[in-house]
Image (tube, rainbow, N blue to C red; front, top):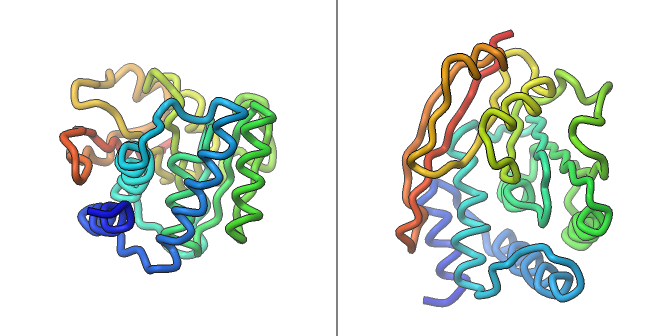
Length: 214
C-alpha cells in the first residue's frame, strides 16, 4: 500500500473523505515537517508510515468528537508540529483554527506551513496558553490538546477558552480515566467517549469529549 493509499483509506475509516488536493496538502506538510525536523525537534517519529498513522490519522480521529461545520472556532493548545490542528484544518477548510505554541521555532514552523498550504482562517499564537486573556477567553466552540500529560491539566487549562456548551476533545490511551472532582472543578461533563483503533494499526485510543456547562 502506498503512503497515499494508506492516508486516504485510513481517513475514510475515520469518516473523513480526503480529496486528491487535500491529500497533496498533507504530503506537502509532511515534507516540510521532515525538512524542519533536521533543525528543530518536531517529532521523534521518522518513518512515513508511522507519521501517517500515529500523527495524521490520530489527528483526524479528533474530528469524531465534534461536528466540523464551517465557521466553527477551534483552539489547539500546545500545537508543537501542528497535530491535531493542521490535519483537521486541511480536511475541514471552513473551520477557523488558532494554534497556540510558545516555543518560537515551532511557532515559526507552523506559520511556514500555514503560508505554504495557503490555509485561510488559521493563526499561530506564540505564547503559553495560560498567558492568554481577552479576546481568547470563552471564545471557542472546540479546544483540542495533545501535549498535556494529564487530563486534569488539559481540562483546567482549556475550559476557560470554551464558550458555554463548547467541547474539549482529547485523545487518550484506553486505561485513562477522570474523577468527578476534576470534572466539577473544571465545570464540565463527559459528553461521550469514543473507543477506536487507528486504521492500519493496533494503536488503541479513546476520544474523550467534555462539554462546558459553567
